[in-house]
Length: 162
Image 1 (cartoon, rainbow, N blue to C red):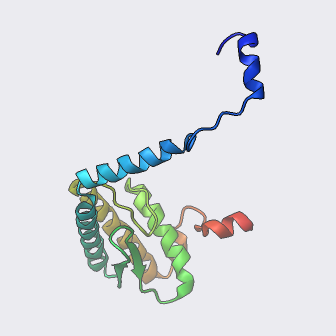
Image 2: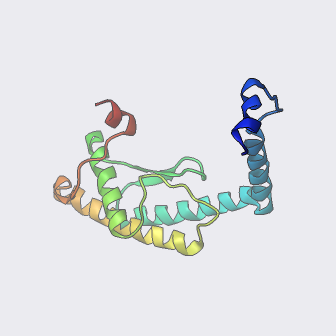
Image 3: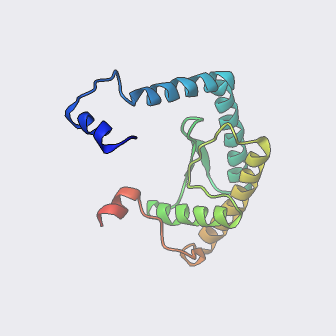
């Protein structure tokens, strides 16, 4: 900032600097690592994942569906045993729809954060129990497609290339 006369020589100069703005990313990374250590994130993520897994497995069991939570505790997903693999996209979409109806916006997988409380997980488990109940009713009646109020969820890459 300054007069045109004072700034004009800068147009002919090259000023070198170590890392330029790369230091911002380095410092942000170090700060994040320090904060994760301070919050004992490794153990808390494991605890949150286990509690969430238990809540979802209980919801699956109480619905009468066959399935389990699978995957790592940092990214658990739901695997349901369905009579026909062609039902997977329909069931996944119905789960998303019914979870959203109950105020929980998620796919068939979850990503717990350090901000999630046991109450949040209880709410998620209750919502999942309701969603699984609707899925079970649709499978039993043979009209699961009729329960959808939206388009079937597309895979992200396929959505972009079609």
